[in-house]
Length: 603
Image (tube, rainbow, N blue to C red; front, side, top):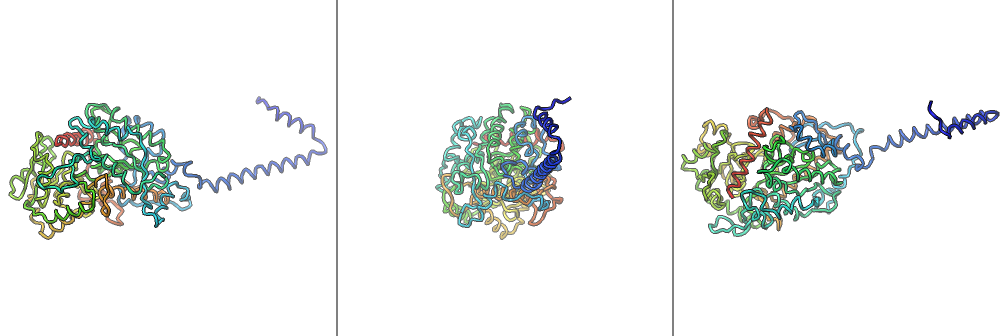
């Protein structure tokens, strides 16, 4: 039997003693008080709580925002194995809902959106990012809608790496490439190939520090994160992994990435959108950050497979056509102007050059890669009197590793052949366009589905596409195909390439162009547009239930107003092996490893 409390015993005794002539009035009084109590309780529950719960401060429930408005169900889940998920437990425990989320789009036309009934939406004013969105309405503020907040990361994530620059490459003293704000040593112009100013021996993997230093000069920085259109994470991700690619276990390779996301998730800025308004930059190809297994023999780290890493936008020099959380930005060239006039002068010079070669190629064969068409391209170039060839081997010819020799060849050619390197992309493509040479691509992932922020969607306006399958089968003559293009069309294409030069180069980080937007400006604008669109989708409760991440390359090709994916002529180029482990071990990871070796060997 349950023991009654002294209070209840006392109350019962008093009731028994009080029975008599006052019995009925006391019963009525108690009944009235009881009714009043239940009335007030029900009123408080249904009217006060029921009417106001949607207006709660967003800081009280940041993850419900992600659950209701951001999470995109995928028909093709991300290939995270059990070991990867186990090692990323800290992210899952702290942000379980965000683990399941995926970026909505790749700055492209999204699939059909399902918009929920107005009655289920939260009050827009309850979202913490509304203040940032409203800055656009302030016409007197030139930075309205463009503010960037930069996390003040501990120096181990950036500056300390520069102090230990000798560890950034096992073959090269990288310290010389971190000089001049990441531009590298200034180049001499003995042969007159370059301009007298603005040219540097820039390493192709130096975007981390170049971009970071350009951000320091960004005109719309803010210390108030509530005003920010996007949040920049100045983590030198490319430099970090470069230190540990050879001879280190996965624990060492993943350490800084896990440490970074742990630091970020403890920040109040992260909780507003679960990191979906954050972005970072890595001057390496995406495959260096997409290790599928936890075997020490596998390549790279797993930054882009961490739950928090999937929420942020990562800008890389080569992105994945099958994933939506990375975005391609140009490789750095040798040209870093400090003033607009330097760009205009260079463009005028490229317009006036006499180009005696129909086409050219600079590169070496890939005898160990049976899918490479470089051997066929070299053969066709050797057999043509209209082609200029700089053949590079593992031992290397000095001219292949000489910026002046390469740029001189590009400046004297109408078309520059740009087959795949070890991975899809090459720095050479940007050096060629800088020289006003029309690029010829053989795989759509070498440019068209990569640099959608920086290159026109109409690729035929500035380039030529020849399927590598036709070259491999020896079905075509490159020379004949290029000769069939009318001279007027060639002139238009060359002008299109030259006009694109400003948005393909990185200005000197120690200055800023006045009227022109460089590659940095284009990328920052694109990130801001993407975050703004995500925020508006949250407010409108748009849900992209039909988004297929493994077909993310297709969304960038949709025309304005088009929403349905359909069969595409480039589908065969992006078919993935069914065995994901084979893809990792024999394709992407091997391409990243070979690319790193070959490109570093050219320094």
